[in-house]
Length: 341
Ligand code: SF4
Image (cartoon, rainbow, N blue to C red):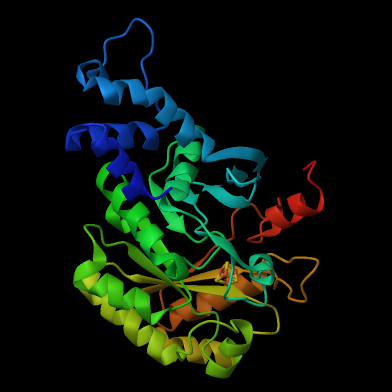
């Protein structure tokens, strides 16, 4: 279900824009849509056809996704495995400080070498309504004030659904626009859309997966990402940062012996010094099935310190849920291998 289909169905039942807004808000806040016994609610005064349709609509929205399993981490995060209506699963992550990481696709076509999701290839798109479902399910557990599109999938490959969800979250979900973070490996279509007249009413912040300053290594690590050099990617990022007035968040998954050497530090300084940008350095979550390893925390801290000293604003972050199959796609892979999990 796309959000625009839901809005159309409500209009066909006689809903005015205010009614549509209320339905969307109740859903987004995980609140009941239909009559609760004994209480007068604004819905009591809506057109009869609309009122009568609400219980069935509520059931349909609930059926879009359910939490199949929850995996709390020691850091205050929790990984959620969400079962969608057709039996497919995606991961969402409750982040510390009221953040939520959502998935935009089942599987992913980019095929990053260090990612479990990338091994599956693209299975299907996640609809805008299924993205909102991830937020509603999370909100039933705890407050959500920031949504990052960094879960399974490449949001740029599902642009219409992702932008539709971003617009709803920004307009009616009580989430500040810069707290909606669109993450991409760097697809030129994203910049065209976000910088153009079709961006929609909400401009999200942007996170770009850089991972290396070397074009040839980036092609190997992200084999099916668009062929932008790191320089081209940063130039596009800078253009968006200036247009949106939000700094670009560059993502750097730190892989031992691959992109943690001195020449990469020089490359980062060359690319990012003086830019309106923040570098998020995230030591890799080792996955037994893949050959990449996580560098020590001390080494990562030293790299971040040196970059800071050389004029690049760097934050060292641990990816949420380290202790609970924290690599993107790991939870889904485990559950597929052993459905009792
Ligand atoms: Fe896709 Fe992100 Fe995994 Fe790369 S890291 S394969 S873009 S899900």
